[in-house]
Image (cartoon, rainbow, N blue to C red; front, side, top):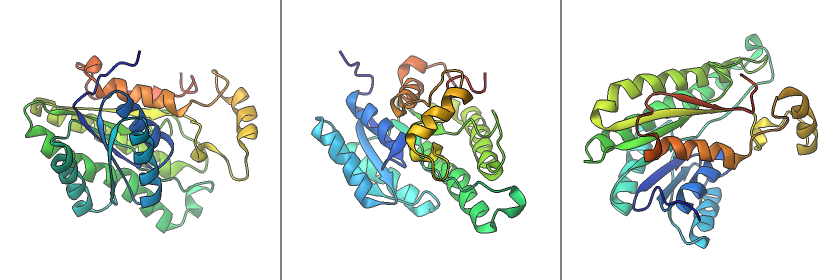
Length: 255
């Protein structure tokens, strides 16, 4: 029997059109949450919302750009207006541009990664915290960082790692700033996960599976559902005393 840790709660997930974001949105809905799915592409968001509703859940799809202050404020407002509150937020939207040494990275790729991966989390956090802090029950926020960052580095991924390290530090600082306001903030740092982002250029899923047998103690990539389970734990009352942590889900790569 599926537990229902989020019944009558409203959850917001950015980057919910695919991958980890979609998996988190579906998992939250399966445990009773009303889910606001956000991202830049309408089509993928509508697909996620349809999957939630087909399973008997409630969803609202909202197009939003995490790098725009007005979009983030409007997104949070839409969640409250449509479902009555904002109880859980998962800041998952992110991009990766890499594969070359830092000195060869185009400036536009550097700026884009910082804008989305760092400033996007800041803008989302700010809007979410302001709303949650004004609610009697507060709220819980989970940011999606990465093992690339504080936990490990890799050639060709320096800019991405710098941004995700910033997400981890931003998470911990915000957690200390706002736990007194009733807003509990944590992060999850996935390692290689079964999404397109973990595929090297030209690599197939079978090729990735073979590579991961030698690169990860677990011998495989993490399933998106496994990452989602970690996110839901931190967002739930089961983690009521967990504040400012960065939970690594990587099959032992950084152990």
